[in-house]
Image 1: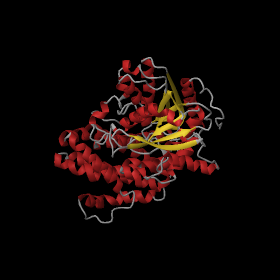
Image 2: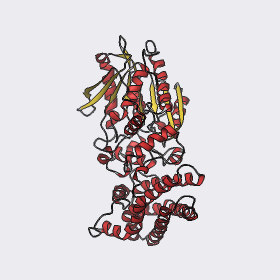
Image 3: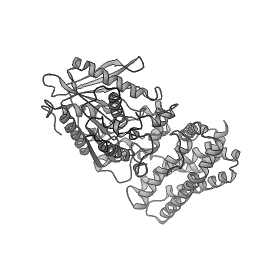
Image 4: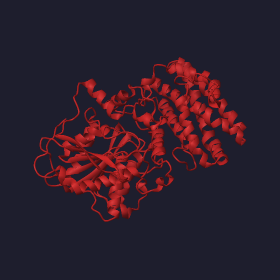
Length: 527
């Protein structure tokens, strides 16, 4: 499910293709007999209902204006078939002949519909409407999803064209809404059957909060929803585990940001602090440059502090859309330089400083090292890139086989890029973002690197290719891949054995780089 021509992440045709990729992967699970068949079909129904409503209110009304009457009629006819099949699937159960027949028909109709849209209709539409219109229509497409009648339907069909169309379309989609009533708490889980039981418990816990899809919300709405840390805390509470992991101290400092203001630098001093200056690890949080903050990644910082014996510092860089690229990168570079100059003020050794991060934090860790090397400044003694984003392109097979993964799926990745790079289409080729495009001679300046990847992660392929690129450039590189886990697993060590293993792997890598006095932190807690 990929378009044959270039798009920007927020373009309507890009967003449509992302939706197609998610549903296709869910169909593949169903055809292979993997996972929870009922939940998979319910999720497909939810996604197709939102998608159909958004296309019919935003996209299809434009087609006749552009001479695409036949395409309009064919698409709406196929949508009607899809809706009727969804209603059948909602009132029957897996294993019943009617259910299985309807599912077989649905897969066939949707695949034919996708083929027509991606290979013929969307390219024709872009050519006739113009590429500059795609981004605005993309915003309208997401706004329509927030209004879609899988949730309470707009009361009055007379406020405008979208509402009138909604009134005409509502009936079959209202049936889908009724079918899914009470099932919101399963819409956010991963029903593919590909996760380990411990990882499954975490995504189930997050889904139990009943979140709306992050990728259809405005950023301020999305930030109010529970993050991955909330899911881990819920599982901990269910198991009677106390938290957070204790450290000697946590302190928030105010340091300069790159725009003449201030940012918070959170400083974690490990329990095994000992005497004398300690090594320092700057750990950069993820969230796609839009979501999440220091609190979301608190468990990773605590675990790494105690496992390495290092002081962990984490910058709360500016986020998009309030501050778009390169604001976050600039703040992280500013914070790193501040740490080198001021490490002694919080007990740190400025000669033993490493860097790392999760997701876009892994991106900014490597980008910081490259920027330092470019101007002849000392690079960190080591870096750790945990499921890093290293290209804005939809790179590798994981964009297909993990398109439907949770908590990070392909539509959410595009949503993040849409906000992070708004007004900056050149960001896609900027070497701070497109790390895979950096020449080998520049990569050679990077310090010993550990790359960690997860099986159920759209970023898996690019992380693995990043490790290969570094190795080819002569960088001392270690790749550690973890099956059966998802993006954001690293901070879940309290309830996920593979997260504990990954943190221990990171700690060994860092202690080797820190050298004397950092081999084994005294009194590091065992789990």
